Image (cartoon, rainbow, N blue to C red):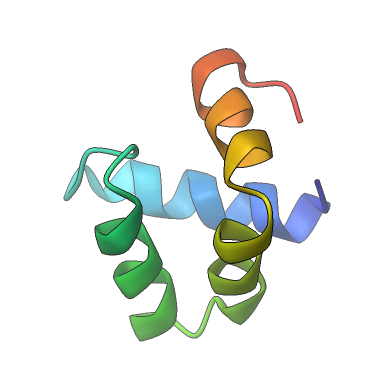
Length: 58
């Protein structure tokens, strides 16, 4: 997982505005913040994303 994507995930998580497993909401929040790398990553690598959320490893 690219470092920039990790940073974007952590920034969204820090808002506390959504459950990080609610992918449509996370993707919308990423889009609204121009985190297009994360928007694409969620589409193409949902299992890697879930692994990162659960373990912090990515």
